[in-house]
Amino acid sequence: MCYSAQIQADFRAYQRFGGNLDLDAYVKMAGWCTRNGSWIHSVPKGIRNAFLDSTESDEQEARAAALDAYQAAALALEQELAEQTARLAKAQMVLAGPKPTKKAETDQRVATKKIANAKSKLAEIHDHAKGDGYARIWPGGITPVLIRDPATGERRVVPMRYRCRMPSWTAADEKKWDGTYNARRDKLTTAWRELWGKTHGVMLARRIYESVALHDLEHRPLAPGERPISVEVAFRPESGEDLLLACLWRYVEPEGDEPGFYTVAAITGDPLPDFVAAGHDRSVIAIKPEHLDAWLDPQASGLMDMMAILGDPHEVHYVYEPVDDNAADDT
Image 1 (cartoon, one colour):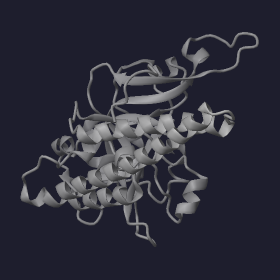
Image 2 (cartoon, rainbow, N blue to C red):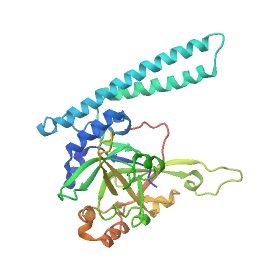
Image 3 (cartoon, rainbow, N blue to C red):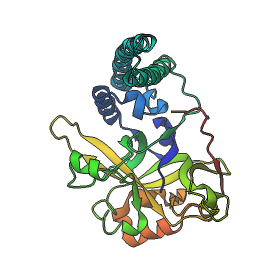
Image 4 (cartoon, rainbow, N blue to C red):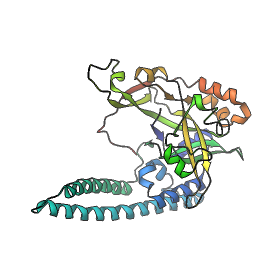
C-alpha cells in the first residue's frame, strides 16, 4: 500500500487542470490546525505558504489565517522550548549530583531531543522559502485534492486530510481503524461503496514511498537464521512528470468541538511491474490525463467506465531506490 507520497503542495499547480482554489476550505483548515497544533507537523510548506505573498483582495483572509497559524505555532514551540530547557537543566543537576537516577537520564535524553525538534520547527517558521513546491505527506497529513463539486459541477482544489473517515464513523471509530488512507480497488464496491462512483478526486504526486522487505528488494531468499528487514523505497517516474493519483474523498460534517473537514484515500491496485521488481505487492493507481474529466464526474460515466479507467492506468516507467535515512525531510 502507499503510505507516503511526495505531492505537489502548492494549490496553484492544480489550476492547469481547471481547479479553482477553495479559499474558504483553506481558511477553515488553517484555523483547525491552529487549534490542534498541527500547522507545522501535518501541513506541507507549499500549502502553508500558498497565500503568504498574495496581494489579491479575495485571498487576504487566507493569508491572515496562515499568519495566525504560524504565530500560534511559534508561541507553542517557544513554550515547549522553555519547558524542556528547564527539564534538561533539572536532569543535568541530578545527574551531576551524588545520586543520579534513571529518570534523570530519561529526562535528559527526551528533553534534548524535544529541544532540537522545537528549534528546528522554529527555524522553519522563520524560513518561508517554498523550495520546488513539492512536499512529502504521511497518513494524517494535509494534501491538496482536485475534485468536481457534486452540487455545482465546479472543479475545486481543496485541502484534505490523507486518511479518509468512513461514512457513519466517529472520531473514536477512526482511531481503531486507521488504515483508511488507502482504498483497495477490489474493495471499492463493498467497503468503499458509499464513496465509490460518487466522490472522486486526484492528487498530484511525483514520488511514491513504500516499505518492502530487503531480501525481496535484493531478489534473494532469506538466509538461514536471517530475520526480515523492512526498508523504505522511493518510486519516481523516469520522465519526471506529475502523476494524477486516483482518490476517493469525503467531507466530515462538524460535530461537537470538531469542525467540518475533508478527508481522502488513494486507490491502490495490483502492483505495476516496477513495483513487483522492487518487492512490493500493491501500488497506487495513476490515471491517464485524458481520463480526468470522466474520473471527476463518475455519475455521468457509470461505474463500469470508472473501473475501466483504473484498469488502464497511466503507463510510466518507475525508477526506484532505497531511501537514505539521513536525507533531509522536505516537508
